[in-house]
Length: 343
Image (cartoon, rainbow, N blue to C red; front, side, top):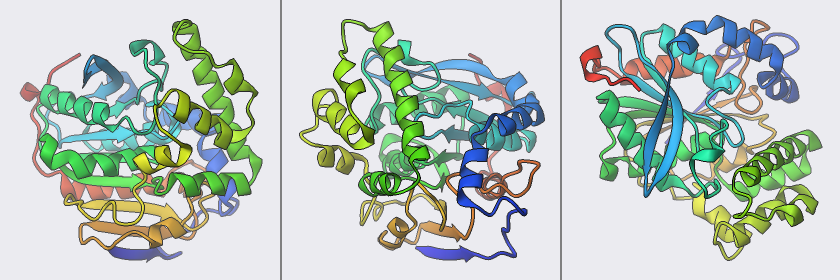
């Protein structure tokens, strides 16, 4: 594994953006949402809503933005937990990729992005098989070859686990880029519990809204009243893991999607991991414990917060620049318009 510490000469945020909480909170703010929605209108204007096959009757949904003519290739984007294909960071990097000539598919995980109605079962982080199957469907329908996959936070975790399975699954992935990926779920929980309450409270609120919506669609399948009375993410996650996810314990559930230690040792697709020393959600120490792998490039920045890496008050992200630059080097085979399907 090649580890590079990003210097201030490479990435130094503007004054006022060198605080981890400023980075992390502004990144998901309505202020940035208005800017990226306006700046990357071509991506949004070109999008098609697709429902893709996750196998065993599972349906996942996302937005596909194909180029109007010849394309440089396909890039698939994964959001983080309780985010969506319309999260600021997904639209931001998707817009830059689209403007540079790439087709972009922004995939929603189950029960994200108002897709709760598509499947009776609820989302959890070990549902990797349906994501891999959905990517196979996307690959077939778009005719893509040598395409790239990028994900943020939990989406970065999914992207790296997908890359482990890609050769056996027949996925033609040429490069993976993971931004602040969850490495050890247990350590992420501990970090949020020990940090500012704003992050844990944010996820509790978003999760509660999601489960209320799910229950309204499938009222006979779920009883969440007791869950809503619990405090914090630890108790709430343990409750669902043992009652609805079919795990014996919270630890078993976390182990099911951890990529810590030697779990990425078998990765044979080139992968770039970008993280920050000041991430308030994913501790940077988790990356030091990853087993060496010649296919993995680890980039560590002094600043950046969680999945933000905002360069300036124009709300431009250095992570977006890195992803576009990396994809341009890795996705070399063009996909012509006659090979692409529409929704």
